[in-house]
Every structure is written in C-alpha cells, then in structure tokens.
Image (cartoon, rainbow, N blue to C red; front, side):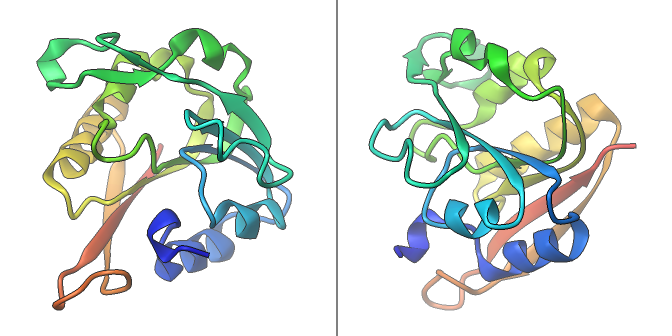
Length: 170
C-alpha cells in the first residue's frame, strides 16, 4: 500500500473507536485505506479516477471531475460531476473528505452541500494545507458544528505535521 494514498493511522484509530461496525461511511476520494474501512463499514466511495473504482467491495460512484463547474469565488477549476452524485445514501455516520486530490482542490464541495446525506461526523483530511483548513472552517460555519484538529507526523518528512479535522454535526 502506498501510504500517500490513505488516511493516517490516527484517523483510522479515531474512526474505529467512534463509528460502530456496520454503520455507513461516505468517502470523497478512495485510496489504499478504503480496504481497511470496507472490512468494518457500509462504504460508499465517490471517485473521479476510474483506476481506483472497484478496488474494494465499497459501493463506488464514478464521478469525473467537471472543470469550471464550481464558483470562481473559491478559486477552483473543478469538482466531482454533480449529476453523478444523485445516488448518495440518505444518511451516514461519517463523511470523509479526502478527495479530489489537492491539485484539483476540494472547495467545490461547498457548492454542493445540498446533495450531502445526513451525517453525524465529517473528517476533513489534509488540514495542514491552507485550502483544506479553510474548507473545514467554512463547513463548520455552514453547519454550525464544532471541530477537533488532530496532528500526526505520519507521512511527513522533516517533522512537519499532517493534520485532519473531525467535525461534529449537532
């Protein structure tokens, strides 16, 4: 497994200690860590890269990136094809925001909050990057939720911190 294509161990530990086995998880962006999750949870994976679709027994939704779909106010060029997201589950315990990749950007999610299922927790990965940190803050503002930022040194060189945020919906 390529550690660069999965959540850090601290995120898996948080998920496994908080989300009950068999509950639903929606992930934006699948990767090598999806296998670990699908062994315990009812997974739905939104993925733009057809090469990742079907790597696990998750329910995959192939949603190519549509460029210039999102508002310029977030400085994004594209996000998942909204029309492909019509079959998301109605409710999940956790939404994981770990895609699309950083070079595409994740702020497009803010334009499509109306398609999200009901959720209790949301995990925004890579909040050591300013854009993801801003995304997490905007999501908390929109949903009126609280968040916890967790730091880990896993996957980072030179002592840099990798961070992810846990948002709790009230």
